[in-house]
Image 1: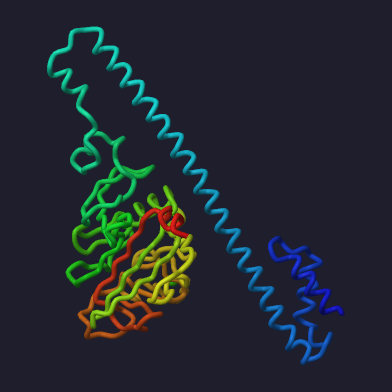
Image 2: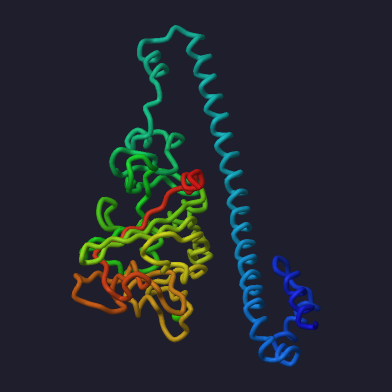
Length: 347
Ligand SMILES: [Ca+2]
């Protein structure tokens, strides 16, 4: 009877902080449950207890995600207010121009400049007017380099990659396809990004932070081994903290795919480079051990920024995805993000 009372107390504490009495009861159950009902009884009740603990953990995770979404909502409200202000200013300027044009006889060149319609968001045209910059890749018939802008940063270029013609394009944040570009780099290099957008590159942690904070994003990882086999891992959310937060991997969402979920192990970890040891390994720096940079914890479950080998090496220094092929080397890795609205609409 005491056992069932304890379980009822546990059930009552799933989604809120347990009271001191509940905690005491929980401890008593852990320590004395065998005395309460004997080994056979405990054996039958243990799965129920395990399930209760798991449910409590899920509730806490869910609460964490809600907090993050609330933060994003506050930021989005700020963005909307900012853009409303810009629209009001544009309207005001437009009305002022209209009044000036009617108050005097316009020359042919003046009429031409006023009547020129907006020309869209190509990279050359948007450079003259920051207010028309896109904030993401849209759907394009082919992949391209595009200039975008997100709140809190200067305009920057991204590689928009089209996976499927009828879907919004992805921003490539990491591309590995050969060994020409060295990825064993310091913190500043990873913060700012490096490489050629049209080839192997890393977009940069600061841009990644700004993008994922401006809108909820999803993450797609595409892998190819040296036999030409392809796999993928799709995560419904991605949120990267700011530099004060050491660009921590704050949110990953739900995993789907056929490469295995190698990244959830790294959820919550700060980013580590060879000159900034933010990992959970007290005896050394994982960036040195794995010859790369990543959201390392005490260990690693994947190493997309490791050293590039041409298939002749098998070890922890290479590019690997443990949940698919252990330490077997990858021939190519591509990590891409896009706003998650599209996925939400499909659910
Ligand atoms: Ca360390």
